[in-house]
Amino acid sequence: MDKIKWCLEVKNGIEIVKPNPNLAEAYLKKAEESLESMRSIKNKDWKISTAYYTMYFSLYAILMKIGIKCEIHSCTIEVIKRFLDNYFNEQECKLIEKSSKTRIDAQYYINRKISDNIYTNMIKNASRFLIKCKSIVSKLNEKEIMNIRNKIIKIKEKS
Image 1 (cartoon, rainbow, N blue to C red):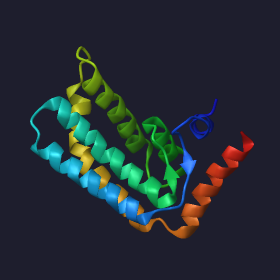
Image 2: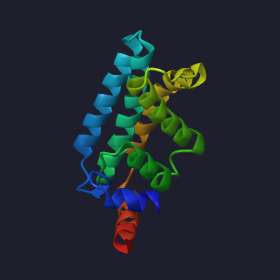
Image 3: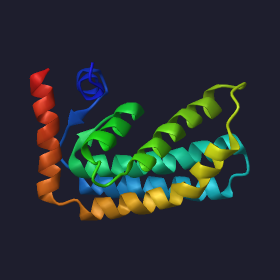
């Protein structure tokens, strides 16, 4: 089954709501706070979590600007991959996907080794990711927002 269709059907998956620029700004603020925490924390596991949440809250700000509510992280990432591919390249999508998996491994498992490469990549790119998402939030116009919303509504209607 198509991931977007699944996300539209599952509880807490994708839901079209009223676009909310105020919530978008609030999530960008949460992302900035996560980034500040990441910079001050020494523990590797918590640094991974705060780096991931810097990126995730940044993405969620974009969703709020568009009017998409989603409580399942993999669905949020799928929305970005499918409907904001003109803003995010394949490398950035892979970064957030790997970061999500790495955060889960670091937070929930004791015996999973986190590679230094992905760890360094997350720490190095969290700030850039936030800056990029801020730019997208400010650039998204009404026409683009409606286009994305309509694509999702059409998929929902077909299922």
